[in-house]
Image (cartoon, rainbow, N blue to C red; front, side, top):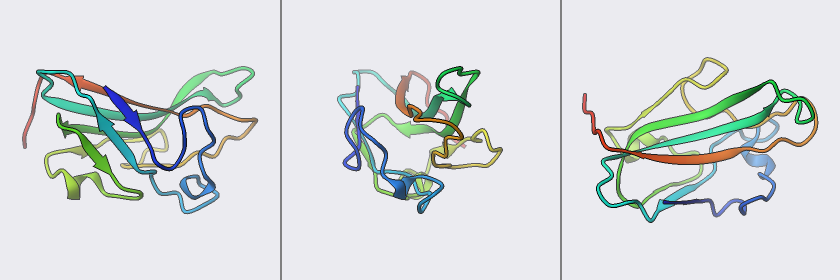
Length: 125
């Protein structure tokens, strides 16, 4: 499975627009090359360097989207995943809110991992 963004390169800097100092909107995300037999996708954005990259104490969750369809997909900048994929849901981030919350590292430069996972169970509500 491949995850990418046209807004920044792998290992690159996230543009200000997608941070709390900017517009605080989610970047565009593309997920392709899914494994055969996958039933759904989970997308997670996390900061493993919280609060200080020199002494990380926890992984801070910035975004969770689950029950995405197991097809190549594209989420545009600032998109509401539920509008594009009606059977998906967004989970609580570590600020206690549903949806995306952009980076705002208190100390130093942090890494932000956008990861996707395929599951074998499709749920509907």
